[in-house]
Image (cartoon, rainbow, N blue to C red; front, side, top):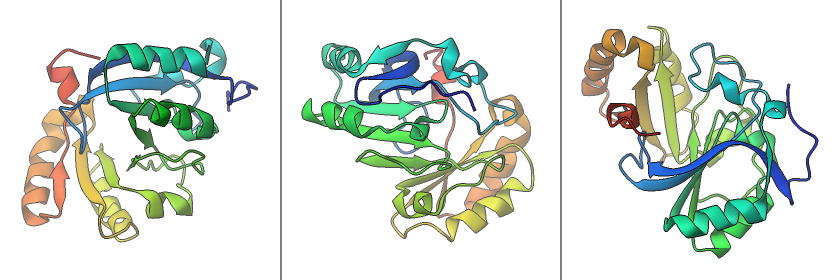
Length: 207
C-alpha cells in the first residue's frame, strides 16, 4: 500500500483536479469539479488510472489550495475520487467544501471506512478487495463494472445488501464495451431496477 504519511487536515496527495462534466452514474451530465486523490491498494486489473496507485508519485496539495480551485471554478458540485479516496480522512476537506456551498460526492470501492460527511456515496465495489459493511448502508448509488459474465450474478448479490433507496447501475468496462453492452442492455430490460451507466466523458473526449 502506497500512502503518504500526511496530516489530512492540512494536505492530501492529489493526482489531478479539474472542472468537467460527470460522465458516469446517477449524476451523468452534471458539471462537476473532480479531485482525484492518489493512493490505492484495490488493484483493479482494468483500472484506467493506474498511475494514481502510488501516492508517493504525486504532490501534496493543501486543503486551502483545493478550496480555492473549487471556488474559482464556479461549480456547485465536487466529486472526490481516486485512486481510493476513502483511504484518507476526508473530514476536513468535505467540511471546507460544504462551507463553500458545495454538494460533495465520493466515488469509492467501499474498501475503507469513510471519514467525511459527503452528500452522495457512489459505491463501486471490486472483487479484488472486499468492501466494509458500512459501504452497503451508506450507498446512494451502487455502480458495478461489468468485465466478466459472472459479474451480473455478483451485482444481484450486492444489490440485496444495500438500502431500498439506492440507485443501481451497470457499466461496461471500457475496453470490453462492445462485448458486454448488448448483454447489459438485455439484463436491464429483464431487471428494470437496474440502469445503464456509460463513460460518456470518453465519448465527449473530456477528462
